[in-house]
Length: 141
Image (tube, rainbow, N blue to C red):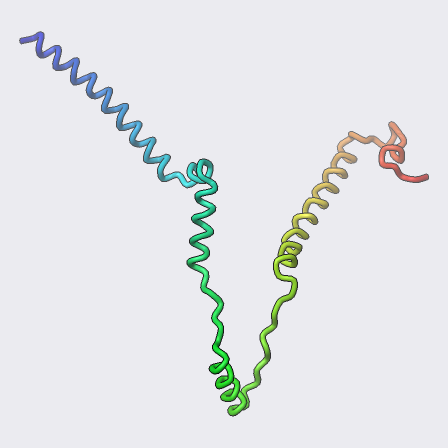
């Protein structure tokens, strides 16, 4: 009977090890499934398409008044002397928006380059007493 009891104990220990490894694997899989960075890294085009589709569905469409209703509205506004200004349409559209986004980035890049240049000058890389600095920076004499 002691042989079978030892066998049972050994089998239980091996089962516990296997179950422990399985649980660790399940926990790791659950962490991977809930990590959005993993999905962005491994499926960027799919997630970009989903974001585009969600944006298309969530952003409301521009409403246009039928011409008959617009005339009735204009007549009512005139009747009650309500001042109305026509809507201001922005010009330039996409090109203007892209330029508006590019200008701060370019400005920040230029400032960073200037800071790096001045930091290099002050750090001793270019010491004023060692060489003539006008040759290094192409400064006319």
